[in-house]
Length: 257
Image (cartoon, rainbow, N blue to C red; front, side):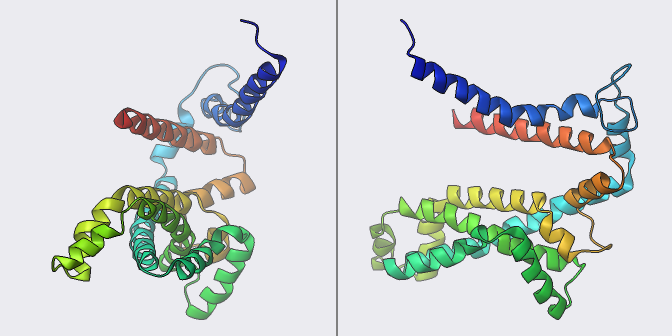
């Protein structure tokens, strides 16, 4: 069967877009195996020296651990607050819930530099500059919209008559939320928590505004490595993150079958 020119054009365009998205990510793998002291392709042989440098460097490991535990705290805090907000809006009228949702989504629409400048001015007043608490609070505010979007999507599929039935059978509001609503929206909560963790783990603009020396996250270390000297360890870190992402994606695909 002859393929139409339009179909060939769309197919070629799709593969071109896919290559444009994937190739820049995959190029870090050979770069991470370079035998040189600067970022570039291997010259004489493949080398794992930059992976060894990452695993043996207390500074890199400390920054990685800091990003992980901050991201975990942010995921829990954002999921808790975002879920409570979403459930509260779900009980409101449709108009009030719509206004509240738009207000919560505003942080996504504001440019990161503007957000970070606002955080900086406010955090200076509160004395939270260059502190883990300040970073966690800022990242929690950035992660909240993603949690609310996911939880609202889950609540949209929940029959409003189920909580009403539970209340009619004598369940308190708290018990209704714990035993009826939360189990029904748990997938949305997990999705929102994952997004909140990713936002925190990957965030760099706010960290540069809010930290000086005491707080070192992995994105900040990568940024400093690019600014001071183009360190191939950056490519090694990127390769590790790419493989972790692929493993998580593969696990999710296998589990969904």
